Amino acid sequence: MSHSTRAKMAEQRAAYTGETMPQARAGVARNDHGLDHCTPEQLHLRSLLALALFNRHPYGLPPADWHAHRLLTYTFHLSPRYDDLVIFTRDPEQAANCFLMEGMDTPVFPGWRATCVTDHHIRLNHVPTGASLGVEKSDDHNRIVCARPCSESAHEHYHTYESPVSDLESMHVGGVPPMSDAARVLLAGLISRLCLTAPDRSWATARWHLRPRGVGSGERSLPEPGRRLWGAHDHWELRWGGFPDAAYVASALTAPVIGIAGASALDRGHEISVRYGPASLILQESSRNSSKTLVGRRGSSRVPRVPGILR
Image 1 (tube, rainbow, N blue to C red):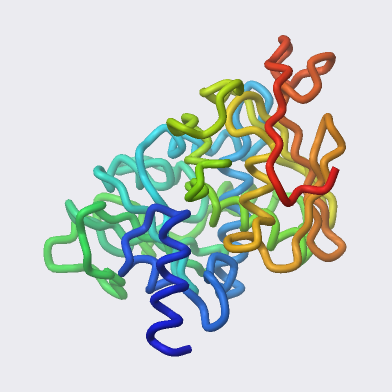
Image 2: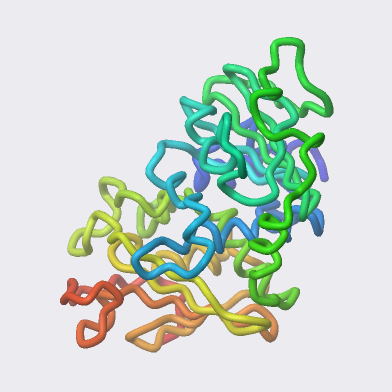
């Protein structure tokens, strides 16, 4: 890829993700935006993160107990790379605590171990998947990959590689339903597209937290408490209430510039089915079916129409 082509691709990606240009350049692939181009270890981790973030009580299934969904209440943006996933935020410790907390007998999210912990960056490794995660200050412009602790690291206050994965952690991670390769791409795609906003503001996912100004007009601005992502093999279903609308999520997964190559969406009115190969992900936001809502109360009847989704 030429320098100019890479720069143009990074510019297109950054327009959706909120990354800086250096951050976006670190993630673009040879032929596309790079959001889905990653190692098998990263793909496994991101699909597991989807289950952790998109299950929340009172409707979430077992990964809700990991409490990683707290991350969505913080201000951050993501930078998915081939062999890494980086969270940029104002308070790295606060975000990292959604996975691994200081002084806890058991990691909040099973399997995480700290490699380096400083005031401006934290490096974590997920032992069951073999993948890494970085949490860095938003104003830090240098890519930080710590294979070993920095001199000022306080990682010894956390679980490190010296702490073997416990039987309880193995039980939690092992309790996740079996997932096909194609379904893993779809679920990992939810994570890579967690913080997107279309440049023309026709749709957004925006951390699934608050509808950005200028995006939509009649839909609810806030998400509702419960979320549930569950399934097995090729068949998965994501249910939630409030922002973002299912059409926005489908657009994030299938839009020509930023979507998953080869993915398509079919709008059935009360739900949207996103397909990738033999795998399907049903998106059901409660306001699309007021007679049977996830949250048990009537939602908005307004359904956004976003170009590119078959009806």
